[in-house]
Length: 72
Image (cartoon, rainbow, N blue to C red; front, side, top):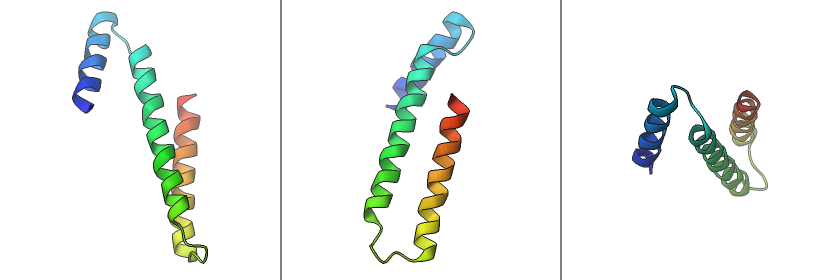
């Protein structure tokens, strides 16, 4: 999949000289993948999760939120 994305973005940039729709779509797919991974991490937390376990998930949430904010 990464090879396909690379080829598409290289072609897009070569054709237009700038990033465009394909890059935007790839970024959206990557954000969805990150959300799915975070969701899985949250579901895997035990009910009696330690502070350290909760902190790891909170850090991932903050990084994802910052990435979302940067892409808007």
